[in-house]
Image (cartoon, rainbow, N blue to C red; front, side, top):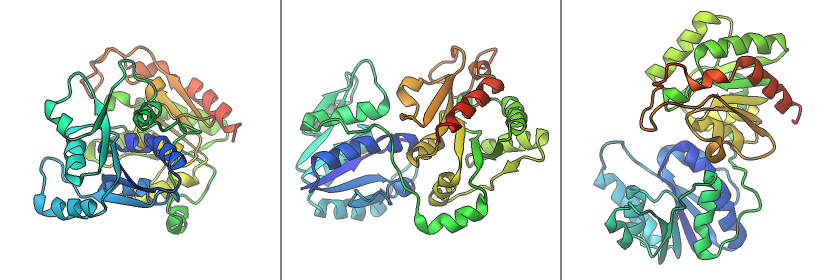
Length: 335
């Protein structure tokens, strides 16, 4: 049997899919298990030993190139998959599922799904009205194939072992707490002045911090603001290569951030994480497992459709640095 799993959403969503992939492997131990994701996400899966193949589809936001994608789709069609499961259930995944042409095709449906998606799948599962944790939700989709829940809902990814020497050069000490100060939405970011206070408190407690951010002009400006207050702070250079970034993360002693993709990278690598939640729900998005903790700020007053904070006082200001430090110290005692 050949099974293809598709996921065309965000980086964090891709990592949270790994428990469902393990459930497939546990239920179909002799099957070939393939994964199809956007090309830039392939380092997340390439070193999982229980996957047979990872397919990275080229994509360019805002437009599609048929001359580039059709040979790729044709190669997938030649695999003659017995089953495919589209964990995202969006338009791109629906079209690809239909074009690849697996014998059994499974995905989600909602009361507001586009009517034509019915022709892309053989089975559709109605999204639950009350959404559980994302990893549990994705595993629930497989109940349509009578696949039991995975033995663990903890995420799992592996670094590229050939990059560990280069990662050691970028992060020489393995006793460093990495702090990721950016997120895809500014409203999910702990204010820079809170990071500054946290840095001083952590240093006084004997903890060594280093800072990272995402690629982009706005994200780089956060580091500039941080450095204006903490010129002595260690800041990792921009790492454009995701595979190398994962190798660096794997060396860290712990990881602190808001709700963002790198949080799930660190958790999947087995690094203890402390996450700060406000605009989004930790019950749905916080990493699962004994090595992971989260703190919740005050009630978020922002619109769910807004990427920036609209409230007079940022909800994450209700997570004071002293409380974050205490939670981090408790977490590190478990390691």
